[in-house]
Image 1 (cartoon, chains in turn brown, blue):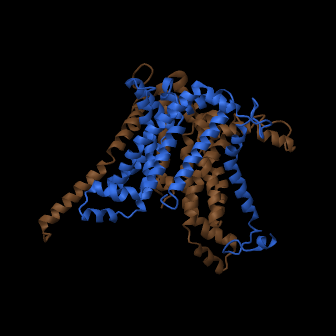
Image 2 (image 1 turned 135 degrees about the horizontal axis):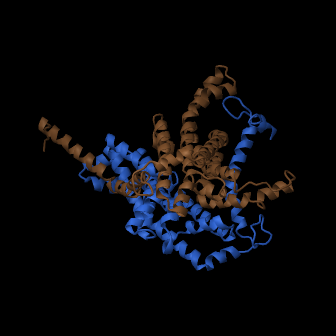
Image 3 (image 1 turned 180 degrees about the vertical axis):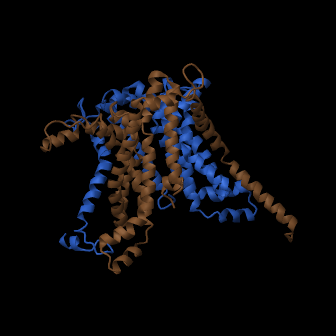
Length: 296
Length: 273
């Protein structure tokens, strides 16, 4: 049957295509529904609760308290401090590692990659437990340090900020190394060769060519680490020993101990807003799925 | 050795000797990454009440303590059940969404795709207390279906990421060919596309399983009573004291994860992400 595509047909085809696009879009319906019911609506509800006072009337008291009481300021300060230090430590340790892996021959690189992926896939709880065991007063690190004469008294490595930071860097490091490695492998090494053939020293070739080209991967990884750190709960709860109270821990405390929904919700709203603002500003530079997956 | 040290390590004529510091730093960071995992495993076989490394006396004491405890067994069973059900919910829903959003090529699809990924970055405690609040009203706290649905919501973003990455490297024209030969869109998907992205689906399913199995914060609020999960019980045990039984459980969990990971690698060797 010969098909003649007149204007009539063209319009029908276009309509067909449009209908199909909407149908395809509809395939995401069940997942979206789950997202709306299990996340968006509950969070929206909390948003509403954060403006309701103990007497059931609308109020800004929960937010006012956050501004007035120094304890809240301290919690936010701790959260930012911990997130920032973790991010910086991850960059300082993760960049050389990614650089090394990117320059190793394939077999050695794969072996190193397994070492990065093994903890990545291991339960956070298991790893937190491992650090608890290693860092405690009579733990392995103190035993070895004392046996080697590095220090005399057992160091307080856990149930404080140090332990929390060690645990968090351990959890977050793969989130930096993996996207960074992807970015580094995408760099055309001919550019480095060109730089050195034009007389640049290795250090200069690195500084002026390699580093700037790897920067987008580094920034993407750092932003995602910082954002994920802001919401951390398990590690500070276990390794911080009650001394490191981040926003998430305070939210959980408000509910578990005091059933204070208004206060917990207000904290949550501020935390979420901060997260989204950060993500939005970063999103102007790059897309979320690239930040998360390192896929290009 | 000396030859190797002086040989060029890169295109910029840096020798291995000049790069030794990099190797050293890299090795230290890698050691930092794997050490805790590798040290907990031998410790779990210690006979002592205190965790020692290396154990002075080897035994399976903490494993039998775990296996003999009806409480630990109960929560383990629950965790496996919830993780399996979550996998069954999240994998198809996530795959369907990833495929639909990828194929529709509308501007709206991109926005929805990003929206579906948000559970990864929204602070989990906030979502958990929100769901807790809703479940209290709906009388769904500590119910199996409630936990499975909330875990599925957390797992879907990972499924979407993995499947989307696989679709990006897949040539959609193949489906077009099938359809021009008379196959319907669903048939083209099931017979042409699906078999080619099956390793991505396997990875996605594994991720969904692990997401649920490892999840603590949500479980802390909505998975108690008869449906308490393994990680929830571990978490509360961790906050109280350092119980060597947990070293045994941790070792088992590391073993299961490594096994599953190795299996997907073996099945999908050289294929997909």
